Length: 339
Image 1 (cartoon, helix red, strand yellow):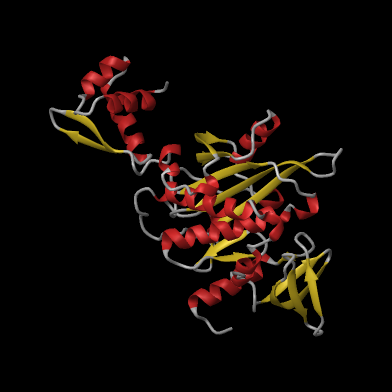
Image 2 (cartoon, one colour; image 1 turned 60 degrees about the vertical axis):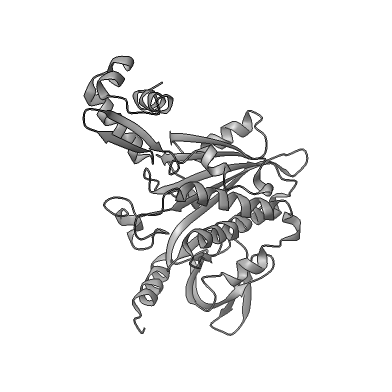
Protein backbone atom coordinates (compact mmCIF):
# COMPACT_ATOMS: atom_id res chain seq x y z
CA UNK A 1 0.00 0.00 0.00
CA UNK A 2 1.46 3.37 -0.99
CA UNK A 3 1.09 6.63 0.96
CA UNK A 4 -1.91 7.85 -1.06
CA UNK A 5 -3.78 4.58 -0.54
CA UNK A 6 -2.92 4.60 3.18
CA UNK A 7 -4.24 8.12 3.66
CA UNK A 8 -7.40 7.28 1.73
CA UNK A 9 -8.04 4.18 3.82
CA UNK A 10 -7.73 6.13 7.09
CA UNK A 11 -10.13 8.82 5.82
CA UNK A 12 -12.61 6.17 4.67
CA UNK A 13 -12.48 4.44 8.06
CA UNK A 14 -13.06 7.67 10.01
CA UNK A 15 -16.25 9.68 9.29
CA UNK A 16 -14.99 12.65 11.31
CA UNK A 17 -11.89 14.78 10.74
CA UNK A 18 -8.49 13.12 11.19
CA UNK A 19 -5.53 15.33 11.97
CA UNK A 20 -2.50 15.32 9.72
CA UNK A 21 -0.39 14.53 12.75
CA UNK A 22 -2.46 11.42 13.54
CA UNK A 23 -2.33 10.22 9.92
CA UNK A 24 1.43 10.76 9.80
CA UNK A 25 1.93 8.86 13.04
CA UNK A 26 -0.21 5.88 11.99
CA UNK A 27 1.48 5.59 8.59
CA UNK A 28 4.98 6.36 9.82
CA UNK A 29 5.44 9.30 7.47
CA UNK A 30 5.96 13.07 7.78
CA UNK A 31 3.20 15.70 7.73
CA UNK A 32 4.39 16.98 4.35
CA UNK A 33 3.84 13.50 2.85
CA UNK A 34 0.28 13.55 4.20
CA UNK A 35 -0.33 16.95 2.60
CA UNK A 36 1.02 15.73 -0.76
CA UNK A 37 -1.11 12.56 -0.60
CA UNK A 38 -4.25 14.60 0.09
CA UNK A 39 -3.41 16.76 -2.94
CA UNK A 40 -3.13 13.68 -5.15
CA UNK A 41 -6.43 12.33 -3.87
CA UNK A 42 -8.14 15.63 -4.66
CA UNK A 43 -6.69 15.51 -8.19
CA UNK A 44 -8.17 12.03 -8.56
CA UNK A 45 -11.65 13.37 -7.73
CA UNK A 46 -11.99 12.84 -3.98
CA UNK A 47 -13.58 15.77 -2.18
CA UNK A 48 -11.58 16.24 1.03
CA UNK A 49 -12.34 18.98 3.51
CA UNK A 50 -9.49 20.48 5.54
CA UNK A 51 -10.20 22.32 8.80
CA UNK A 52 -7.67 24.17 10.93
CA UNK A 53 -7.02 22.39 14.23
CA UNK A 54 -9.35 19.54 13.19
CA UNK A 55 -7.75 17.84 10.22
CA UNK A 56 -8.99 16.17 7.06
CA UNK A 57 -12.42 14.71 6.30
CA UNK A 58 -13.51 12.71 3.25
CA UNK A 59 -16.68 14.43 2.00
CA UNK A 60 -17.43 12.64 -1.28
CA UNK A 61 -16.10 9.98 -3.65
CA UNK A 62 -18.73 10.54 -6.36
CA UNK A 63 -16.29 12.20 -8.80
CA UNK A 64 -13.76 9.39 -8.51
CA UNK A 65 -13.22 7.07 -11.46
CA UNK A 66 -14.01 3.72 -9.84
CA UNK A 67 -15.69 0.48 -10.75
CA UNK A 68 -18.40 1.17 -8.19
CA UNK A 69 -19.20 4.61 -9.59
CA UNK A 70 -19.28 3.28 -13.16
CA UNK A 71 -21.61 0.42 -12.20
CA UNK A 72 -24.19 2.89 -10.90
CA UNK A 73 -24.80 3.93 -14.52
CA UNK A 74 -24.67 0.52 -16.22
CA UNK A 75 -27.73 -0.92 -17.93
CA UNK A 76 -28.61 -4.61 -18.14
CA UNK A 77 -26.73 -5.09 -21.43
CA UNK A 78 -23.39 -4.30 -19.74
CA UNK A 79 -23.91 -5.78 -16.28
CA UNK A 80 -21.58 -8.71 -16.99
CA UNK A 81 -18.44 -6.59 -17.38
CA UNK A 82 -15.58 -6.88 -14.89
CA UNK A 83 -13.99 -3.46 -14.38
CA UNK A 84 -10.42 -2.83 -13.27
CA UNK A 85 -9.12 0.67 -12.60
CA UNK A 86 -5.36 1.12 -12.97
CA UNK A 87 -3.28 4.19 -12.21
CA UNK A 88 -0.49 4.18 -14.81
CA UNK A 89 -0.08 1.59 -17.58
CA UNK A 90 1.89 1.32 -20.80
CA UNK A 91 -1.42 1.11 -22.64
CA UNK A 92 -4.74 -0.41 -21.66
CA UNK A 93 -4.70 -2.49 -24.85
CA UNK A 94 -1.38 -4.03 -23.82
CA UNK A 95 -2.72 -4.86 -20.35
CA UNK A 96 -5.91 -6.44 -21.73
CA UNK A 97 -3.97 -8.48 -24.29
CA UNK A 98 -1.94 -9.91 -21.43
CA UNK A 99 -5.15 -10.77 -19.57
CA UNK A 100 -6.53 -12.39 -22.73
CA UNK A 101 -3.44 -14.56 -23.14
CA UNK A 102 -3.87 -15.66 -19.51
CA UNK A 103 -7.41 -16.86 -20.27
CA UNK A 104 -9.33 -13.75 -19.25
CA UNK A 105 -13.03 -13.89 -19.95
CA UNK A 106 -15.00 -11.73 -22.33
CA UNK A 107 -16.17 -8.48 -20.82
CA UNK A 108 -13.04 -7.65 -18.83
CA UNK A 109 -12.54 -3.87 -18.90
CA UNK A 110 -9.35 -2.03 -17.92
CA UNK A 111 -9.47 1.74 -17.42
CA UNK A 112 -6.34 3.75 -16.67
CA UNK A 113 -5.77 7.20 -15.23
CA UNK A 114 -2.69 7.57 -17.40
CA UNK A 115 -1.00 5.81 -20.33
CA UNK A 116 2.69 6.23 -21.05
CA UNK A 117 2.51 4.42 -24.40
CA UNK A 118 -1.06 4.95 -25.54
CA UNK A 119 -1.69 3.29 -28.90
CA UNK A 120 -3.22 4.71 -32.06
CA UNK A 121 -3.72 3.24 -35.52
CA UNK A 122 -0.81 2.45 -37.85
CA UNK A 123 1.71 2.49 -35.01
CA UNK A 124 0.90 6.05 -33.96
CA UNK A 125 0.72 7.07 -30.30
CA UNK A 126 -2.34 8.36 -28.45
CA UNK A 127 -1.65 11.26 -26.10
CA UNK A 128 -2.96 10.16 -22.69
CA UNK A 129 -2.27 12.69 -19.90
CA UNK A 130 -3.45 12.11 -16.36
CA UNK A 131 -7.00 13.14 -15.28
CA UNK A 132 -7.95 14.78 -18.59
CA UNK A 133 -9.15 11.71 -20.47
CA UNK A 134 -10.86 8.33 -20.36
CA UNK A 135 -8.61 5.48 -21.50
CA UNK A 136 -10.26 2.06 -21.60
CA UNK A 137 -9.94 -1.34 -23.27
CA UNK A 138 -12.41 -4.21 -23.45
CA UNK A 139 -11.67 -7.91 -23.93
CA UNK A 140 -13.95 -9.57 -26.47
CA UNK A 141 -14.18 -13.16 -27.72
CA UNK A 142 -16.52 -12.86 -30.72
CA UNK A 143 -17.45 -15.59 -33.17
CA UNK A 144 -16.30 -13.60 -36.18
CA UNK A 145 -14.05 -14.02 -39.18
CA UNK A 146 -11.13 -11.56 -39.41
CA UNK A 147 -12.87 -9.90 -42.37
CA UNK A 148 -15.90 -9.11 -40.22
CA UNK A 149 -13.92 -7.80 -37.25
CA UNK A 150 -14.19 -4.22 -38.55
CA UNK A 151 -17.76 -4.36 -37.22
CA UNK A 152 -16.32 -4.13 -33.71
CA UNK A 153 -14.60 -0.84 -34.49
CA UNK A 154 -17.53 0.71 -36.33
CA UNK A 155 -19.97 -0.33 -33.57
CA UNK A 156 -17.61 1.16 -30.99
CA UNK A 157 -17.41 4.43 -32.92
CA UNK A 158 -21.20 4.76 -32.93
CA UNK A 159 -21.45 3.76 -29.27
CA UNK A 160 -18.83 6.32 -28.25
CA UNK A 161 -20.43 9.08 -30.33
CA UNK A 162 -23.80 8.37 -28.72
CA UNK A 163 -22.23 8.32 -25.25
CA UNK A 164 -20.61 11.71 -25.90
CA UNK A 165 -24.00 13.02 -27.02
CA UNK A 166 -25.50 11.88 -23.72
CA UNK A 167 -22.95 13.61 -21.48
CA UNK A 168 -22.54 16.82 -23.52
CA UNK A 169 -25.91 17.39 -25.20
CA UNK A 170 -24.08 17.91 -28.52
CA UNK A 171 -23.84 15.83 -31.70
CA UNK A 172 -20.63 13.87 -32.23
CA UNK A 173 -19.52 12.85 -35.73
CA UNK A 174 -17.43 9.93 -37.00
CA UNK A 175 -14.46 10.31 -39.34
CA UNK A 176 -14.11 7.13 -41.34
CA UNK A 177 -13.11 4.68 -40.01
CA UNK A 178 -12.65 5.04 -36.29
CA UNK A 179 -12.22 8.60 -35.02
CA UNK A 180 -14.94 10.55 -33.21
CA UNK A 181 -15.14 14.31 -33.65
CA UNK A 182 -16.96 17.05 -31.77
CA UNK A 183 -17.06 20.65 -32.99
CA UNK A 184 -14.79 19.55 -35.88
CA UNK A 185 -12.01 18.40 -33.56
CA UNK A 186 -10.91 14.86 -32.82
CA UNK A 187 -11.97 13.90 -29.31
CA UNK A 188 -11.69 10.12 -29.50
CA UNK A 189 -9.54 7.46 -31.11
CA UNK A 190 -10.44 3.76 -31.32
CA UNK A 191 -8.08 0.85 -31.90
CA UNK A 192 -9.12 -2.79 -32.21
CA UNK A 193 -6.38 -5.42 -32.04
CA UNK A 194 -7.09 -9.09 -32.66
CA UNK A 195 -5.49 -12.50 -32.19
CA UNK A 196 -6.24 -15.09 -34.86
CA UNK A 197 -7.08 -18.72 -34.24
CA UNK A 198 -5.32 -20.45 -37.14
CA UNK A 199 -7.18 -23.73 -36.62
CA UNK A 200 -10.67 -22.27 -36.88
CA UNK A 201 -9.79 -19.32 -39.10
CA UNK A 202 -11.69 -17.04 -36.71
CA UNK A 203 -10.67 -14.71 -33.91
CA UNK A 204 -9.18 -16.03 -30.70
CA UNK A 205 -9.94 -12.70 -29.05
CA UNK A 206 -10.17 -8.99 -29.82
CA UNK A 207 -9.13 -6.04 -27.67
CA UNK A 208 -11.12 -2.87 -28.20
CA UNK A 209 -9.31 0.28 -27.06
CA UNK A 210 -11.11 3.62 -26.70
CA UNK A 211 -9.47 6.90 -25.70
CA UNK A 212 -11.58 10.02 -25.15
CA UNK A 213 -10.30 13.53 -24.39
CA UNK A 214 -12.56 14.79 -21.59
CA UNK A 215 -10.92 18.17 -21.13
CA UNK A 216 -7.88 19.93 -22.53
CA UNK A 217 -4.76 19.06 -20.51
CA UNK A 218 -2.85 21.79 -18.62
CA UNK A 219 -0.76 23.65 -21.17
CA UNK A 220 -2.88 22.38 -24.06
CA UNK A 221 -2.28 19.54 -26.47
CA UNK A 222 1.29 19.01 -27.72
CA UNK A 223 2.37 20.46 -31.05
CA UNK A 224 1.91 17.35 -33.17
CA UNK A 225 -1.81 17.04 -32.34
CA UNK A 226 -2.70 20.64 -31.46
CA UNK A 227 -4.17 21.39 -34.89
CA UNK A 228 -6.68 18.55 -34.80
CA UNK A 229 -7.25 17.45 -31.18
CA UNK A 230 -10.05 18.71 -29.00
CA UNK A 231 -11.92 17.78 -25.83
CA UNK A 232 -15.57 17.06 -25.22
CA UNK A 233 -15.72 19.78 -22.54
CA UNK A 234 -14.23 23.22 -23.08
CA UNK A 235 -14.48 24.03 -19.38
CA UNK A 236 -14.20 21.88 -16.27
CA UNK A 237 -16.56 18.89 -16.73
CA UNK A 238 -19.28 18.06 -14.22
CA UNK A 239 -18.25 15.83 -11.32
CA UNK A 240 -18.43 12.16 -12.19
CA UNK A 241 -18.21 12.70 -15.96
CA UNK A 242 -15.59 10.02 -16.59
CA UNK A 243 -17.55 7.36 -14.71
CA UNK A 244 -20.77 8.26 -16.50
CA UNK A 245 -19.09 8.40 -19.92
CA UNK A 246 -17.43 5.01 -19.38
CA UNK A 247 -20.80 3.49 -18.46
CA UNK A 248 -22.58 5.09 -21.42
CA UNK A 249 -19.95 3.73 -23.82
CA UNK A 250 -20.24 0.24 -22.35
CA UNK A 251 -24.05 0.36 -22.44
CA UNK A 252 -24.25 1.42 -26.07
CA UNK A 253 -21.43 -0.82 -27.25
CA UNK A 254 -22.71 -4.04 -25.69
CA UNK A 255 -26.20 -3.28 -26.95
CA UNK A 256 -24.72 -3.40 -30.48
CA UNK A 257 -22.23 -6.18 -29.74
CA UNK A 258 -24.91 -8.65 -28.66
CA UNK A 259 -26.44 -8.30 -32.14
CA UNK A 260 -23.28 -7.58 -34.12
CA UNK A 261 -24.15 -9.71 -37.21
CA UNK A 262 -27.29 -7.61 -37.76
CA UNK A 263 -25.12 -4.46 -38.03
CA UNK A 264 -27.87 -2.35 -36.47
CA UNK A 265 -25.36 0.44 -35.87
CA UNK A 266 -24.66 1.18 -39.54
CA UNK A 267 -27.59 3.54 -40.11
CA UNK A 268 -26.34 5.70 -37.25
CA UNK A 269 -22.74 5.40 -38.48
CA UNK A 270 -23.66 6.73 -41.92
CA UNK A 271 -25.74 9.58 -40.49
CA UNK A 272 -22.77 10.69 -38.39
CA UNK A 273 -20.22 10.56 -41.22
CA UNK A 274 -17.97 13.61 -40.93
CA UNK A 275 -16.51 13.21 -44.41
CA UNK A 276 -19.76 13.04 -46.36
CA UNK A 277 -19.92 15.95 -48.80
CA UNK A 278 -16.26 16.90 -48.35
CA UNK A 279 -13.75 17.20 -51.19
CA UNK A 280 -10.74 15.26 -49.97
CA UNK A 281 -7.27 14.47 -51.28
CA UNK A 282 -6.46 10.77 -51.02
CA UNK A 283 -3.34 8.67 -51.30
CA UNK A 284 -3.36 5.14 -52.65
CA UNK A 285 0.01 3.53 -53.12
CA UNK A 286 2.25 6.13 -54.73
CA UNK A 287 -0.59 8.11 -56.27
CA UNK A 288 -2.66 11.01 -54.93
CA UNK A 289 -5.97 12.21 -56.31
CA UNK A 290 -9.06 14.17 -55.37
CA UNK A 291 -12.63 13.09 -54.88
CA UNK A 292 -15.87 14.01 -53.16
CA UNK A 293 -17.07 11.72 -50.39
CA UNK A 294 -20.64 10.63 -51.08
CA UNK A 295 -21.02 8.64 -47.88
CA UNK A 296 -20.42 5.24 -46.29
CA UNK A 297 -22.10 2.07 -47.50
CA UNK A 298 -23.57 -0.83 -45.51
CA UNK A 299 -20.17 -2.59 -45.44
CA UNK A 300 -18.49 0.51 -43.94
CA UNK A 301 -16.73 1.27 -47.22
CA UNK A 302 -16.08 4.89 -48.14
CA UNK A 303 -18.03 5.91 -51.25
CA UNK A 304 -16.17 8.49 -53.35
CA UNK A 305 -16.88 10.25 -56.65
CA UNK A 306 -13.59 10.78 -58.46
CA UNK A 307 -12.74 13.81 -60.58
CA UNK A 308 -13.61 11.88 -63.75
CA UNK A 309 -17.13 11.30 -62.41
CA UNK A 310 -16.65 7.62 -61.61
CA UNK A 311 -17.83 6.27 -58.27
CA UNK A 312 -15.53 4.07 -56.24
CA UNK A 313 -15.76 2.31 -52.88
CA UNK A 314 -12.82 1.82 -50.56
CA UNK A 315 -12.43 -0.55 -47.64
CA UNK A 316 -10.49 0.42 -44.53
CA UNK A 317 -6.75 0.42 -45.20
CA UNK A 318 -7.04 0.80 -48.99
CA UNK A 319 -6.63 4.58 -49.03
CA UNK A 320 -5.26 7.26 -46.74
CA UNK A 321 -6.66 10.75 -46.45
CA UNK A 322 -3.96 13.41 -46.74
CA UNK A 323 -3.88 14.72 -43.18
CA UNK A 324 -2.62 18.23 -43.94
CA UNK A 325 -5.37 18.81 -46.50
CA UNK A 326 -8.04 17.44 -44.16
CA UNK A 327 -6.90 19.58 -41.21
CA UNK A 328 -6.92 22.69 -43.38
CA UNK A 329 -10.48 21.99 -44.54
CA UNK A 330 -11.64 21.58 -40.94
CA UNK A 331 -9.86 24.76 -39.89
CA UNK A 332 -11.56 26.64 -42.72
CA UNK A 333 -14.92 25.23 -41.67
CA UNK A 334 -14.40 26.15 -37.99
CA UNK A 335 -13.36 29.68 -38.81
CA UNK A 336 -16.09 30.17 -41.39
CA UNK A 337 -13.55 31.10 -44.07
CA UNK A 338 -14.70 30.93 -47.68
CA UNK A 339 -12.15 28.90 -49.71
